[in-house]
Structure formats: C-alpha cells, structure tokens
Image 1 (cartoon, one colour):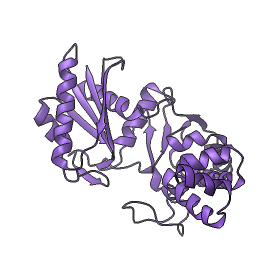
Image 2 (tube, helix red, strand yellow):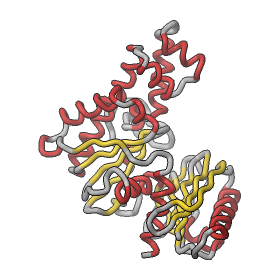
Image 3 (tube, helix red, strand yellow):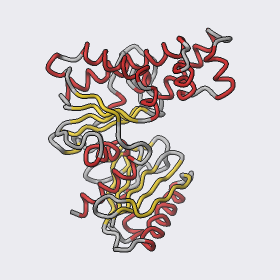
Image 4 (cartoon, helix red, strand yellow):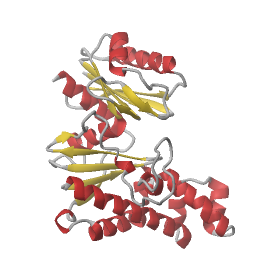
Length: 311
C-alpha cells in the first residue's frame, strides 16, 4: 500500500491506496502554521493510516507548493509554508521509518492526470491548474519534466506581457500568466471593475457574495457583460501562455483544471482561439481537454509518486 499527501497552504489532504490506486482511506485537516507542527501533523497522519492499512505501507509520496531541489530534496522556496530549507523526504522518513519522496504539488497533479487521468495516453502533455495561482507540469517522452535542478516547469510564470502587472507572491517578474489567468488576478480585476460600475450586477454580487473568481463566473454565466469581459481577458492571456508553451514543448494535449476552469466556454473558448491563432502552425493543433481529477489530483499524484519510488 501507498500513502499520498498533498500539503496546501490551508489544508493537508492524504490518501491511502492499494497498488491499483484504489482509495482505502482518506484524511483532511488544516495546515498548521509552524514547521514543527507541520512535521508532527504529517507524522501523525502517516501513523494513523499505517495502523488502518491492511498491508504494509511501502512508500509515501508528498506534494508541496514549493520548489524542490533535486537530487537533494531540499525545499528551496516555499511561499505559504514554513518549510524552506528542510529536506522533507529525509525528515519525514526519519520520523516514520518509511521511504518518502517529495515533489512540487503541481508536478504530482500532472502525474495523476498523465498516469490515470485526461492525459493518460499522451507521450507529451502540458497540464495547467488554474486556481488561486497558476500551476502546472509538463510530460515529455512519457516522463515528468523537472529541469536541470528539479525546479523547472513553473508554467504560471511564462510571461504574457513584459510590461504587465507585477506577478503575485514572491515572483520578481511582471506580466506572468499567473498575473492574468489565476483566480487571484480575476478577483483583482473584478474589484477594479466594480469601482467603475458600482451599480452593476457584478458589484452587487460581490457585495453580497464576496469578491472572488467564483462570483465573477456566476455573474458572467447569468449574462453580465462586465463579468464576461473579465473572463474573456483572462482567457486571452491563457491562450497567449498556451501558445508559448506549445512552441516550446509541442504537446499532444493541454489538460486544464483548477477552479477557474469551471468558467467553461466564457474563459476556455477565448483561450483556445488565442492559442490556435498565435502558436506556430505545426504546434497549434494540440487537443485541449478538461482535467479528470479535481481537488484529489494532488494526493492521488503523490500516491503515484510513492509507487514509482517503490518500484
């Protein structure tokens, strides 16, 4: 059996699976604030699942929203977690007495889509997760791409407009895909639009339901042109980013997931049109498909990571 753990900035999700990725047990809990508390929580989760397992746990996979250096496994950068500088695989392995392997959370989500999801038959694929930020992973030659030091495929930081807005978080760049097509970016754009249209449906909905991308999507689907324009602009940026990624990786398929993908055609039709218009013609024909896995992608991908380590 295998344990897959997806560590997020606000929650930890874990799964116990058999060799066929059938789910035997699950756990979800809040992410603690401090490094010691995170490590103690992970140790307790592993211990509890191991006790409930009907066969020995052979390995543990962990996805973290961090840049993971290879081959050392050191967490080189971690924006929302107090794990920077920790060799998490070694530390958790010491505490649990089991083989542990760690990778970036977007990479393990991409692994889930490639091994068991929407990109299962693809030799080359790009997976984009459109959520609070923009994450992603690339499959090249049937294998997860890591780059020279293990920290490649930061696909949300492909530049859409070099003179665009500052990128959120610790990125020093401007005009990154994440600054346009993430839920955070759409929410910021909605706040500005509400100032310009204070009596419009979007502004009223934001006062009632909150200023987030879900509200923008709901109002746009109800027919508001201001909200629809915001999603179209995000879709344009997504298409620009996809064209750049297509010209680099030449994927057979783009897999699009995350909360923003729920906007459907209001976002994705614009993205597809811009991608096909901008990409070099030999690279403009990739299939574009929705992700199979939602919030479970991270922990299932982490379980697959563990299976690979135990093979």
